Length: 108
Image 1 (cartoon, helix red, strand yellow):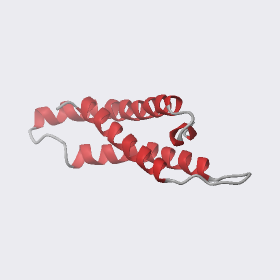
Image 2: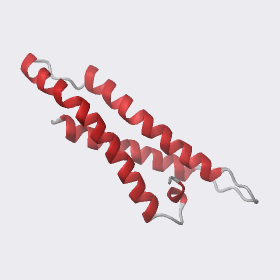
Image 3: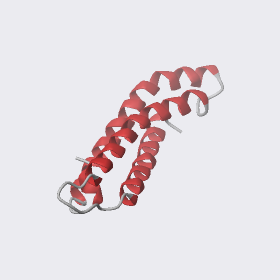
């Protein structure tokens, strides 16, 4: 499978995990609730973890075994990592605007 497709799928899975964690954070009452900041923090932590974890998996687990395919894989991998990061940010932004009155609306 292409590194680009795997990167997009991986970004979507990491975004799903970030959404589950954001939904697990309870609302806080009072004048200065800290829960929106916690949700935003977890979104950005996973934004940083996404390319690091995908690059590690791509180099050590998903890399093809024959030399010709490995060279093509390594040539496309930096671009795939960047695309995965951008897809994560764009999908996160879209979800935060769709659910602007919910818990995911605190991401941006």
